[in-house]
Image (cartoon, rainbow, N blue to C red; front, side, top):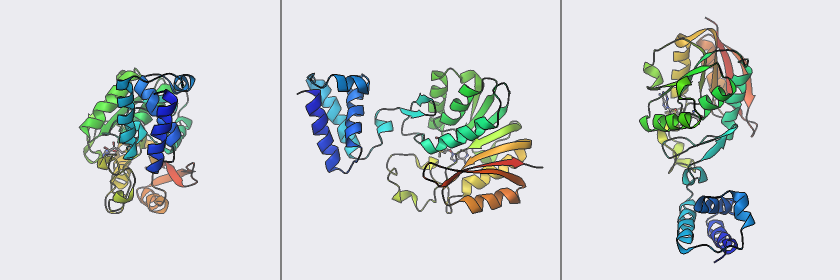
Length: 279
Ligand SMILES: C[S@@+](CC[C@H](N)C(=O)[O-])C[C@H]1O[C@@H](n2cnc3c(N)ncnc32)[C@H](O)[C@@H]1O
C-alpha cells in the first residue's frame, strides 16, 4: 500500500481516538518509520511501503493512539535552537521554558564568563541552550534522578558541551559546591493531588512534576538554597506555575530577594520570575 494510504489510515485511527494533531502526527511517525524527513515523506506519497515498514508504522500509531507524547515515540524534541533527545526519564522540553532561556541570556553579555547552576536539569535543554549562546560560561547541573542525569549527559555530549557542564546527582536540599552568579530552575511545581488530572500522567516522570501538597515544595527549597549559594547581587531565574505568582513573590521577598521581572508565557500566564539576591 502507498505511503499516502497509510497516512490516511493512520490518521483515521488517531482521529477516532481524539488526537487533534492526527495529520502532522502521522507524517512525523512515517518519517520516523522510514528514517527520512517529513518533507521527503510528502514528496514520496506514491511510493509503496514494505511489509516490515508498515508494521513498524502502525506500531508507532498504536502508541500514539494511547496518547503517548510524540516526543517520547520519536525520542526527540526541538527546543530553543536545537534538538534534544528525550525519553520517559525526563520532562519533555516545553516551549514556555524558552522564556527562562531568553531571560537568562539577557542577563549575560556574549563575552562574559559566568558560573551558573541549573537546579533540576532534566534533559539538559536549559543549560545546553544557554551554553551554546554564551561560550565563556560554565554550568553545574543537579538532579536527584540518575536516569535524567544520564540523558542530560548524552545531550551535552551530542552538543559537545560535556567539558562545560558538571553534573551532580543531588537534591537541591543537600547541594553545597560553589557560589554562583546565576541560578536557573524549572522545578517540579504541580500540586501532587492535581497530577492525576494532567494528560501526561502515564508518561512523564512524577519526580519532574510533583511539587508536593501545594505545588511549592521544591520552589521554596530552590529559593532557600539560592539565598546561600548565590553571590551577592546574583540572579535567580525561576519558572513557576500559572497560579503561583503571589506566593512565590512573597517567599522571595521574605528571603530578601528583589523582584526584577515577571514574565508571561505564550498563553498570557505568569511563567517566569527574575530576582536578585540582595544580601
Ligand atoms: C520540570 S522538570 C525540568 C527539567 C528541565 N530543566 C526542563 O526545563 O525541561 C524538573 C526537574 O527537577 C528535578 N527535581 C525534582 N526534585 C528535585 C529536587 N528536590 N532537587 C533538584 N532537582 C529536582 C526532576 O528530576 C526534574 O528533572
